[in-house]
Image (cartoon, rainbow, N blue to C red; front, top):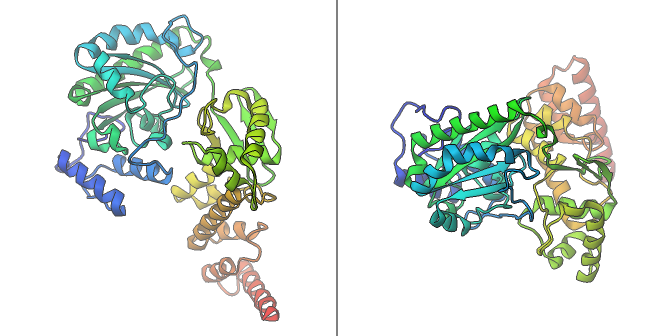
Length: 421
């Protein structure tokens, strides 16, 4: 049982782990991050992303967006034009073989699910229903979510799923591209043993290609495909960007959206109260702020409680984290114009700000490129970073301009620190 990216029909050298071995590897990973060498890199990478996103292995955080049904092939969603192709190539076979077929948009929302009635009921029990968000950072490793994350065809079988409730299923998914090459959706087949076969994976890929030909034949409407919202909170942040434009947000509204973006499962009014104010804030005050926020951002917030974003809300904080996770410190610094909401005293925001700065600082201290370290030292946060200047000294010669500057700066910091003692 393997997760396969790229060409799912290819097998790497070596004997793959059997189902029991995959499950043992999964338990070892959760208990201490250890994985056997024979587990495929795609599995490990996805598990690590899931863990970093805070996905609960026992219960995926599945959000729901109301009004997402695209069953009517004349509906407003651009991918609705793909339904006749999907039905003719996949749905009848799925019904007869105990599987369901799903279409997911580029934000991770399931637009349409059809197929075997019993399997539909079974997957509904784990939240695999129309309107649900199945991004990898919400639900962990799963074929449609991981295909969206990697932009490649993916097959996930049994215990390779990151959350235990989903490990009863196999799934195969492939991206759907618009005529200009963008990923506009994901086609998925989920079920029992048949969904884990190479035949199903090949059929999913062939159907996705047929859908792409359909979109290319009549590309009207594809360009209007909605992109996910982006919240900017770094430096002078406080902006929400959507396909409709940019909205400047007030400090409190920015804080609330950031906290909800960090907690995709949602937050209760009592939890928000604690995270928003260093002293005491009543739940009534929180509810009033959220009500005012709804008038600004509209459907971006789900209508039910706990409070949560109705669809994935990307942040510039996530961009910095992604660069750090890939080991690209230079890219992380380029994506970091300044601290997270520097004027905020909300405890939840302060924690995010301090954590991100600490992760960036640690990555800089471990970096072997003096130019990258110098870029950090040129920021307001890095100017007095003693360890950063010491790292520059270690990386440069004593007579180089940068080395001379670094040593002079250390001497100044030594004098300043000495005067404080």
